Length: 443
Image (tube, rainbow, N blue to C red; front, side):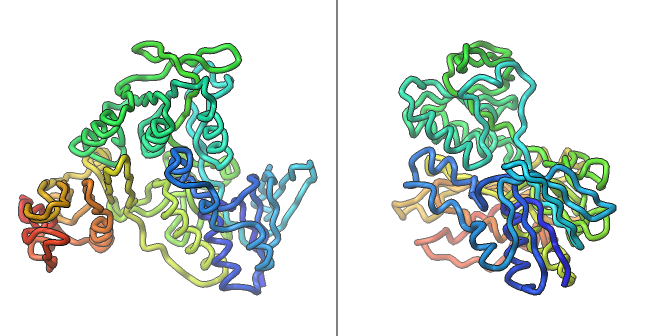
């Protein structure tokens, strides 16, 4: 039997904990988390705030009681202050100020990520919030109940910013979306797709401020205005959704780090120190598109990394098969999904790629309940292996991206798709399927 200390009970930590407790009951597990709740599905914040779901009950899938019933020792609202890696000791302090010292045989770091906070004045004003924890969602939800708040500025047009902007509009407020880039969702999609999302947002009343950099927040006690390099706008609530950085405070100076500060791990989730593992948003992942370590902060990646680390920490060798960064978004019924690299990411990585596009109705024209679908498949010029795909439609096209995720993982070439056996039935698709047609159009 060995003693495992797990720092952090977010998605990665929860997956690691349950894997250990369910499969290795002989191991001693100590869980330390600084929050008051466990396993909050942050991707549901916008649905709850936007009143698309009734409440928050279903957004939690685990609890400290579950861990305790499985015989783990759990410290909640407890901050880890220092880790003595040489002596294998974790030092922490509880909410009441009690000092805690836990020795370990194996250590799993699941410290997650932190919101990016811009270096501007006015951040201390009331009604300036970030979107990360359950408590953040509670604050935003309560603020939107305030009738005096009519203008809401959302800073950052990534996934969270776009979803929150939709939620704000659904609550009847004026939503302004600020983004330094020239379009929304530029980190995941090419402009051929993002321009469509921009139109969806604008058509539903979201005020778009692209190529605009926030310089200052103004107000007396409460925020009252947001100032950018292009103007000043009334805003009684400002929501920062710029992105996240790995929470590496406990690792700095002791563990090898990636270029962005994430803890560098191998495909067993092992760090540069023996018996120390790192999982989730604080750590790197192996990208099958790049065929190299990368940083992709997604809950799905976090869960898989937690499972891998748990088995390895308990003595069962298990190697990660890598990830593609598969993701999706649905705004006012418009669905976009992607996996692997977009063109900008491929160029940044120094890859020489080609792409093929196709757009058509999902089903034959005689089917009335029908929408257009667009697809882009990106492939490496030399090897012709698929390295990225994007699909968008008002149709539910989400499941299609899973095939491309597997294709990237397995190194499938674009040519393999040209005569792929894809069934046809008018209820579902066209006889010349858009996937087939895109592949046939490849150079």
